[in-house]
Image (cartoon, rainbow, N blue to C red; front, side, top):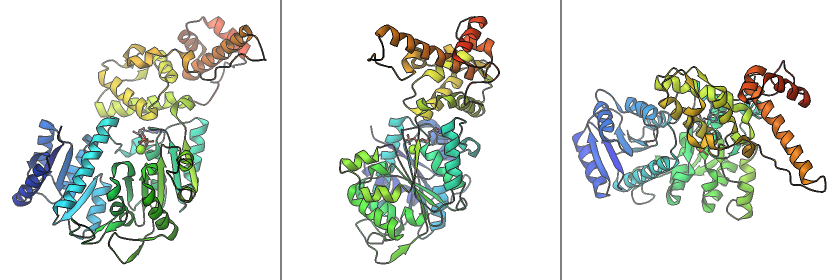
Length: 467
Ligand SMILES: Nc1ncnc2c1ncn2[C@@H]1O[C@H](COP(=O)(O)OP(=O)(O)OP(=O)(O)O)[C@@H](O)[C@H]1O
Ligand SMILES: [Mg+2]
């Protein structure tokens, strides 16, 4: 299926040229004269990519961009700026634009930028990435477990250092959130935070993207254009999915980092910038090094401050807090008034494996709230996969019978460990309320107390983490 592009410009001639050019490229193209028209067109038939002028009567390009990054965060928006207005371009990128093209534009440049955006739109659809997180109050990093507290300490300590940070973690563990937090807690906060998703950029465009290019550097380079390094000057450059950078670009990147200078493609002038670099990857970089796919020297240069984000299944103690956080967030967003998550539903959330980590938890909470009418979320309101897993299947460590004991003994020890674990979790969930915990486990309060005594779990306080 062809990608649908929505072109927004108040100048009829530019509109005509854009529409004709893009149709020739095989896109399905729709045009609008101003922001209000564009929003209406999007409501009606949607679009995969939006290309918009900035200066327009009524709802202008920047306002449109802001609305889109709230309401349609998965649609890449390309902004048309006048030649030489770097500040406007940076402003647009900060407001959530995917990229910008400068007027007058040449077909090749337009083609390349649109192709890149269409590819990002495909990626967005494939990952079912939820709306990006524009509201600041929901950008807070939630978690009270030991590993999250440690993370907060690291963030506070290194936010303002110039050192490069390499954030590693499975998909959906909060890498981007941490990168943003590092920027916002630094003295660079008022300067640009420029993100570049290395996985979404075709390899032949990567150098121009990072370092910019001069007029005439290649066919289509009618104007010179600053790269992301220049745009991030004084601020932070976030290289997302760094593991996807091809080897030959890794060399150039390393040089730029080591010498803090570079040249635009086709340029002779050496450019120096003051940029704080943060990189993120979901790949196992040492393994990539062993396979010859990642340069060891670049890894050491990036890995000055390593931050490893644990998968959600390894910090289940944060699940209740996160679930509450998303309950509030989507109550507001969706205009719901869900006041509580029932204990058994919370237990199911805590026991699930979360292969998609926090992003998956967030999606599930959003969906559950969307479909709920009442004031509480009960177990039956959760989607099927969460109900299937039995707790025992997810508690982890299964001991294999060994010299240490017979099968019977091992089974007994395992059962006991499981029992203790479940009781401790039920107590955590109910914040130490023995009656509610007993009800959750479907045992009497009396047997609950006996078990607690047996396992040395005290009644007064919740046993761990979860404040
Ligand atoms: N500790 C946290 N507290 C609150 N929200 C979080 C936390 N960690 C992640 N999130 C939310 O989960 C979602 C995914 O986070 P983010 O995009 O930062 O993950 P990621 O590691 O970059 O994922 P990917 O590898 O898929 O790009 C975001 O909506 C983010 O706001
Ligand atoms: Mg990410």
